[in-house]
Length: 212
Image 1 (cartoon, rainbow, N blue to C red):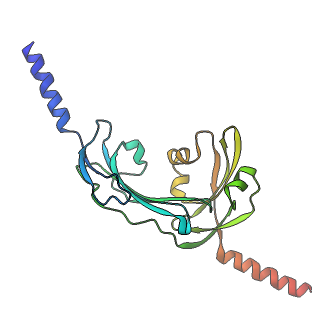
Image 2 (tube, helix red, strand yellow):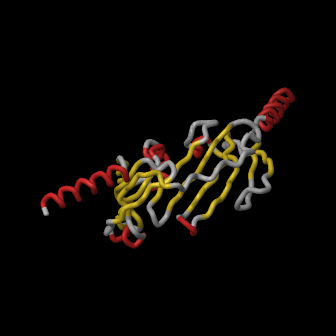
């Protein structure tokens, strides 16, 4: 009986010693992080710098915490930038996960908001998205190298989804489900190019002048 108790206590101590420690923070810019012992199911540390919104209405937050490997989505020790942009709302983040004690001490750069020369169909507002009457064009920014289109369901109502997205989201089923829900019918495709659009416009003007 004593032997069994000793084995159990030893195992418990070893198990506790193997729990990961990560930096965590609660304030918006993570200016004062603290090291905490993670729950048993949290086997990774995560750092995220996120931008939510567009233009002057956008906000930046930094988050550091314990995470499950499933929540990481990205490969371990690989800094990854994601972005999905509907024009009237954008969510972009730079993220990294690691698996050693307090490895998430760094603060990552803010995702880029510079226009990259690509264009996608979009909805001018959330009302247009709900009504399915979308005919706007959106200039993609940062790592947004693809267009997305399709429908999601909100309160039994189909909602049209259009905009710019980074390809690494499109190729990740977990990320797509997290963004658009389990029953989404959203697909990704190639964006337009501002340069190509300019060439087509010049060609159209030339043809018009010839005909006139």
